[in-house]
Length: 191
Picture 1: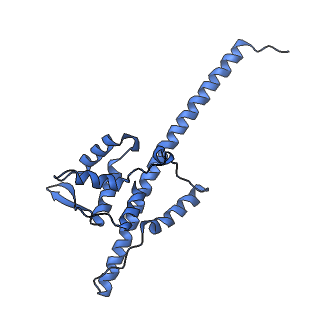
Picture 2: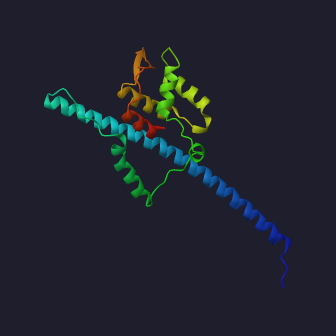
Picture 3: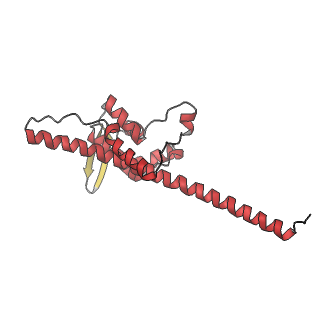
């Protein structure tokens, strides 16, 4: 029976440590990229919703009725993008459950957080102020300024938030409008 030399054992331990470190880096990179993809999906869905709204407005203006047809629900406008993403990935993508969902609780959507934050402040708030406050209050969510800006503009489009320009700065306040069933479903995809 051959004996294992100490150099061989040491070399195996070094390889095992390197493989473990590489796996950890790989997992962290996957999580980072997954978060970026999720943020881009939110932006894409908001743009698709805006497109549907603008096309409806253009159609209403062309027909002269003055009334735009009801916009498709956000889930319907996001479905083609979701299918394209799955096809590009080559396998069905299932979202990871957050700790709150595993525990049986539902986290508020980003749109709900923004609306609540604005409702709690009488003075207009900038996107940076909103992002900083929400990121500090919800560090586990990884809230980014660009996603907050996109979500706020979606809230403006639905009449839940007002945009005010002061010089070169833009500030937002809540309109005080309550959620409708449609905007609640739409906000859930942004949260």
